[in-house]
Length: 477
Image 1 (cartoon, rainbow, N blue to C red):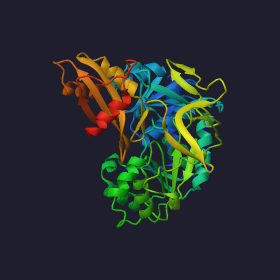
Image 2 (image 1 turned 90 degrees about the vertical axis):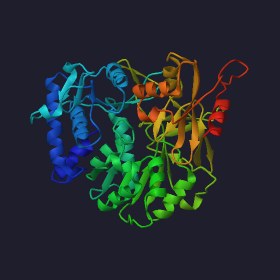
Image 3 (image 1 turned 180 degrees about the horizontal axis):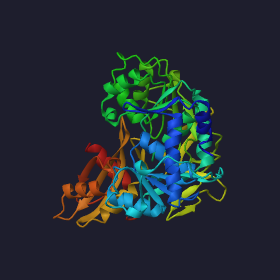
Image 4 (image 1 turned 120 degrees about the vertical axis):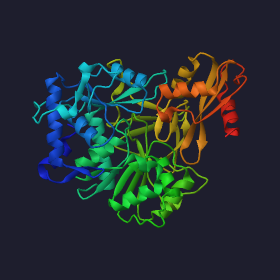
C-alpha cells in the first residue's frame, strides 16, 4: 500500500533515475527488480505479511533496496543503527522478534546465522503478491526509552502514506526534483525521502556522511548536484549557515529546505534565511509517534534573534488540542503511529479520550502554535530523541557509581547538549564511566560534558534537584 505511488512511477518511467550514491545510480526499474529479488528471497525463508525484518545496512542504495523488498512481502522493516554497540543491536533484534536480518556479506558475530540473509545472494525473481491494508505495519523505529531500554514506535502503511502525500503536496514535488538525503532510515525524517520523493518520480541523492562535518564541501556538493530540496535537522543547517561559505556558493536550484527534530535557534535560522533568500523554509514539528503534527512556513519578516520560532499550524490532517491545566499538546489523526512495539507485541498509546499526549508544552498565539519545552525530561540532541532515564539507569548500574543525573544544557547550534553529573566511589574514575558508556550507547547518547560532585543536590523530599544539577552543569560549561 505504501509503495503504490512508487510502483506507479516504475510503470510510468522505469528508466528515470531513482537513487544516486557516490557515483552509483539506480533507475526506478532497476530498484524494483532488485527489491523484488530480495522479497522473493525473504518469502523463501518463510517471511509472511506483518512479520518484522531488520535492516543491517547503512542508509543508501542497498538499504533502500532491502527495505523496499521487505515492504513488497507485506513485512515490517526494522532499521538498525550500525553505530550502536552490540548489546543494543541484540536487544532490538530480540525485542522486535525479527524473522530475518538483511545485510551484506558474512553474518555479524553477535547474530544467529539462521536469521541472516545476504542481499547479494538473492537471485532475480518475483515475489508472490500479497494484500496489504492501510493498518498493516510498515516500519518499527526504535528510539531511546524512559524504561532504560530502546522503545519501538510502530508505523502503519496508512500513517506513513498520509504524511508522505501531505509533504509532497506542500513542497510541490515533481519528477525533475533532485532531493538530498542525509537522514538514517531509523529516523522518521527518512519517510519523506523514501516515500514522498520516490512517490513523485523525483531523484534521491544520498549525501556522503563525511560532508556532515565539512560545511563548505557540503554546500559545494549541493551546488554540484543541482539539489532542489532537502529535509534535515536544524543543527546541520546551522552548521551550514555559519561555516558553509554560502555567500560565495550560489544555490539557485535549492527551492526548499525542511527541518525537524530539534529547536532551530533563531539567530542561526536568520543567518540561513539571509544567505538563501529564494529558498522556501519550513519548520516541521512532532515526535516520532506523530511523525509531523505541526508545520510553520518560515516568515522571514517575523524572525527575531531573541524570539523562538513558532511550530505553526496543524499538519497532515492532524487535530490538535492543548490540555487546559498542563498546556500539553494532544494529537490525533491519520499520520499517528499505531502504538509502541515491545517484546513482539503492539501496545496502543492513545489516552482514554483517543488522543496521543505528546509531553510537549505549547501555546496558541494569533492562530499559530508555539513550543515551550518538554513536560517530562526527554532531550533532543542533534535531532535524536534521548531519554535521560535510559542513560541514568546504565550509569547507576556501574560499580563505583553512587548516583548520577543526566540533563540537557542549551547549545546555540545543536539546541541541547547531553550533560552528566555524578558522584563516585574513590576507586572509580570519570574515564572508566566514559569508556563504559562508549560500549553501551551510540555516539549521540554520549554525554558531551561530565562533572563529578561530592554529593548530588536533592529536593526537600529527597528526590534529585534537576534544576540545581542543570545550573551546576551550565555554570561549568
